[in-house]
Image 1 (cartoon, rainbow, N blue to C red):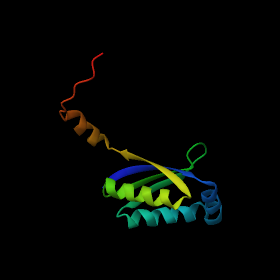
Image 2: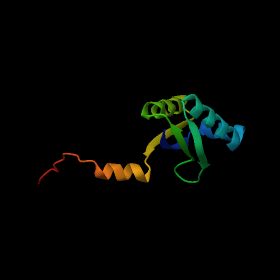
Image 3: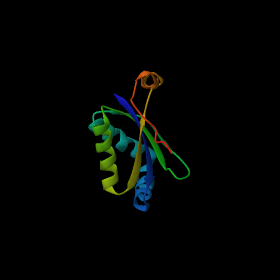
Image 4: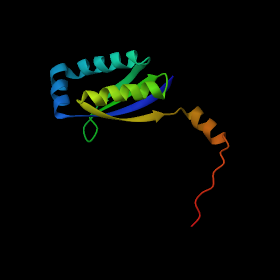
Length: 106
């Protein structure tokens, strides 16, 4: 499975739901959503600042991650930004992979 970082920003309605359900209630809802997408919730943190919550999830593939993000975004209580996470070994493999690329010339 691949790891994804979701950054969530609550709308005013989303904050009302967070206050009503509590942090543990929202975490349980996110855990259930991850499982329904074929994965599992690894970690969830609430934060100060521009991003209200960070979620790290193990999901089968990009399609599953996109489906989860779409479900959250279309509900309207939060918007998400998704980041694909890579292991150190995956970065090593990427560094060894040959790619034909020519930079633009000025």
